Length: 157
Image (cartoon, rainbow, N blue to C red; front, side):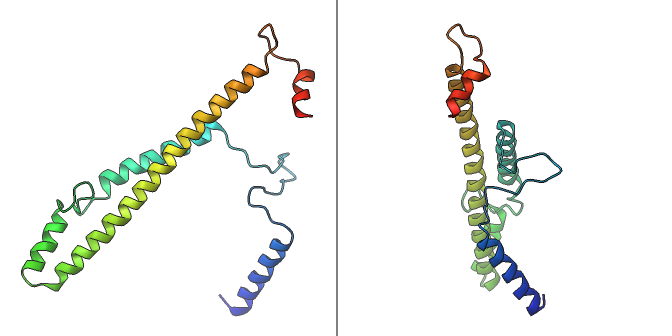
């Protein structure tokens, strides 16, 4: 990237910032008829939560390809190789052990993040479903039928 290109990008970013750029809003697309508001459906939350859970399971099982022992400390074949190399005076044993320790630590961090995302989205989906049920119960007429639009609009004034 040329220096003048970098300066142009910085200037463009400063101009966007000065115009009040919002991260939770996009400008409406004139041809789409959309409002530009951020919309998330429960199905979207469930799909992302499911993907995070699937990633968690796939990583938990498959990321331990070297037998580093992500589930059992020191039980993997790579850990055993590192210990054997160290006991025979090879400096590569210490480096291999460090590599396994860093890999295992980072793997656990990613697994924890996937679990957190999955759990949070499952919780959000459940909470929003409960909120929808409460709102639906409030918006029923005394006889249990749906309220007319004229009555519902009173809630938004």
